[in-house]
Length: 343
Image (tube, rainbow, N blue to C red; front, side):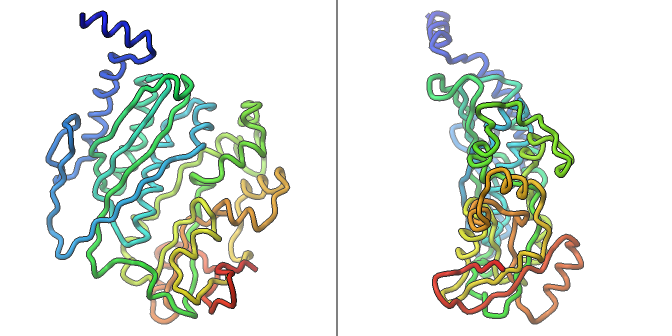
């Protein structure tokens, strides 16, 4: 009976033996990320994590995905970077609240479960987790024929971090005259790929990904798969001194900076204060896209905005320790509905 049930399930498109092999591969990768606070191994019905050494802890959680950047990974058959994209995106999000990551769970849904493909995805997840001392504590891998094409998959992450209540960053300290700094991105990160795929006709012709562009110094596919930069380790020493952090993801400058601004305030940014990377100029030219839309969709070369007090030595410390930080503008009084003014 057991053999017949297995054969019937396989005929329906689900391979239990491949799932078992995949779980064995994932266990070793996940275990390599475990902090001492992890109390259970991979495979239990729940994952245990013991909090300690905190006075007044607040848990900070977030969930996100890699979006249609996964289409690029599938077309290029390169899957060892998107896991890192997912972790770094989630870590950056909770960093904006002043939190450091504790643990993460992932969800991978595939049309066909191929163990070495999942192992490549999880290798990127586990390495990015280790880089920020975050435990990949569990997750779910689901083979879903009929929902996804055999080569397609989706990747989602759920992160939990922690911050002392007195050190939460919510933006309420931001004031007129504060200085707006930016840390460069490493490319598109994980946003805007649906537009990019349309602009370059990637879904119609995957060979466009192999085209070499001198202004990029690489092929289009290589540029689009550049990993999402993580800012946690760089900014963690300075969190007590900043007034606000904005991760520039979906929605670009116009959608993300206002999320941390108190009522009545806006930011004025000088576009000439940093060099917009070639990939964005190429996208804008190829797609004939207006400036306003570019700044509403893409990060335009700035992955994290840091708002600091004008007085004190925070700005000097950041510039000294983070050589690629750029001074972009100031916080001003809002004269209307515009919260982000790019000149």
